[in-house]
Length: 484
Image (cartoon, rainbow, N blue to C red; front, side):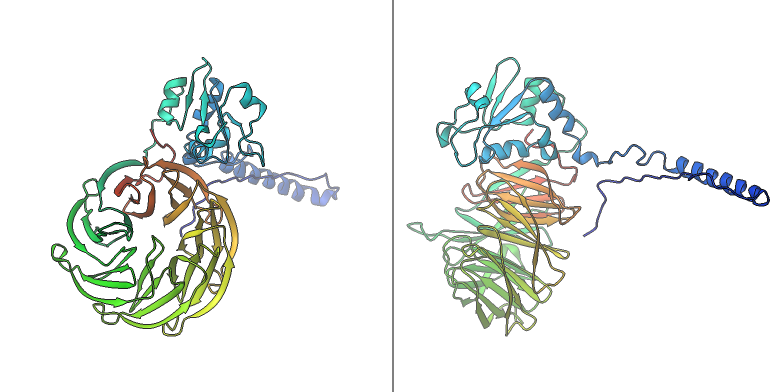
């Protein structure tokens, strides 16, 4: 990953020490040395006078653009009251990105007493008498108050504070309905999106592989739909084939002609579908699957139209995500709260290399460069592991996220998480890959996002509860303003 400096500070200190006594014979030479040193000092001062002489760290505009807006809210007497542990409160503060620390915020929670209130909240009649009534509350200088998550545009209108106008905003450019109970998707290199949908709990279960043309992301178009096995939970692509994992089955579909997509073969597996826990990966001539059977299964795909089982190995309890990097596959297990590393240099004989503790309920992982990122849904954290020794990931940092980050994706210097319970995409700047900085949160409008991927400056988001595919334009990396 390319590294970019967020801050530069250069300070030059050139001076002359105490007077030195010298002989008359050497005095002339010494004077010339002093004059030469002074000349050098003047040159350095001229060159670097605009760089760091004031001890001020220079920041990218992307991280300062809302500072003035947050300060204006404070100056105009606006005040935000809420519980910091509440998901809606977290979402409201995330709207300000790195400027959240400047928001005029008052904490209404007391540690270990979830529904209690601090005195300032009682004085301002903030109602936290029940879980249902807890919500961010804005109180303005004229006495008006607004309850719930408020957009930046509304705050600007209420206070006459000016929002920066020169920053492109991540915006929703399209959405399209999918089949009921959408579980997973995959995007091909030629901008074709494959979505699997279905549930084992319907009276008359129907399961589908739907294919959308997203060559124009602003106008996704359904071009094909075929039936699959019961409750498909994962899809992977390789050449002219789409592999679909469903209940105890992997099906291989020929997609060489999209409008004539058809099933060519299938193979039985150990994985029983009970929701969105399966992961399917095609890597070279092999296919890897994890799922509810607590095993990693490996198939020979030398003939891509017909898979042959070659081996399996036990994992920890409830594997939830997997990613391959080099000779290793990294698997998170959401019930045992672990990250397992398997050596697959010989796919026919996978070997467990290490097991590392994660946060609570790890649901997604992603490798970028020499780092592995893991999101933990229950502990609301993003963890960073060092892969300098790929057989044994080492935890080097952990940062807070919005509630229930269930999926993540890295693109360039940004990391994106899909946060299910708060209906948001959270964006982190990972210019320094070991110190992610939250810079944005995009409102997904009650879509309950389950999976996210980034391609060509667009974020594709699959909503599980609402069965909607959303596409956001995130091409401008100057992420700062949200929910306008």
